Length: 113
Image 1: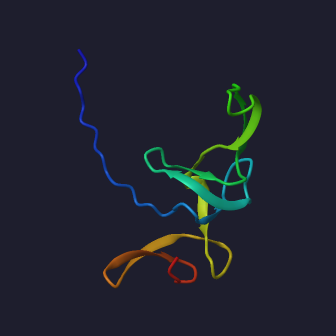
Image 2: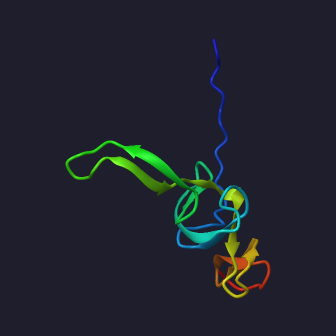
């Protein structure tokens, strides 16, 4: 019989959040930018508006028409980089405590994001 193993759960640091502007680093849409619509932290993926568009077959209902619809698919967080608001280029993120709160700081410009 297989024994149950304990799975370690840990809280992931969220460097990319909903509403951020990001740059795609890898894949078919490499070099494109877009805003983050949703973040799935448990799967380490994000949905970016206008990037990684896939076609999905949808069955029709009384409310909506069926057919082939285009929608954005999730992208792994490792393939995304945050865009620095000051320089406009991709940047890494560090954390700093300001007035008792943890804030995200751009590694390139040093500005709070």
